[in-house]
Image 1 (cartoon, rainbow, N blue to C red):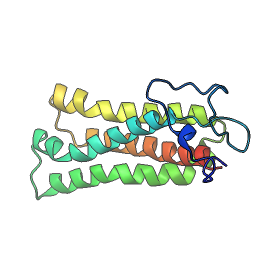
Image 2 (image 1 turned 120 degrees about the vertical axis):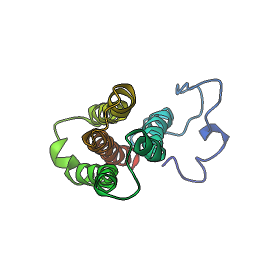
Image 3 (image 1 turned 90 degrees about the horizontal axis):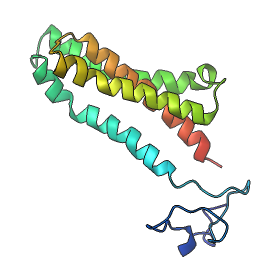
Length: 161
């Protein structure tokens, strides 16, 4: 295993000048003989930066859409941003059934498209076209939730020995 104390020497660290995984560097191999793919970190980082940005932009979206702190629109907005977690839950639970025909790499690409599509909804429709329809928030946050849920389940399945 790559995570044994013997394998965790200086050769297991990524050199800043190269992502070379050739055999000339003493990179520890996994049980199936493949080197670790350290570039997966960047995919993980990109996905969760989108997730973090949407969490942090909730108040700005609320302000842009003229949603007060109380009232029916405020409750609808709160329900809409909660769709992120509903999307994550549903996609984690159903991911092995719905995504079984796709390889893990295809699942990652599909999940990334869900996140990209969900992330561009607010800039286009709310900020750009000045729409205050709460449905855009439902669509955006649910799409990001589904993308993150599929990504997390796939990522964990791929990196787990």
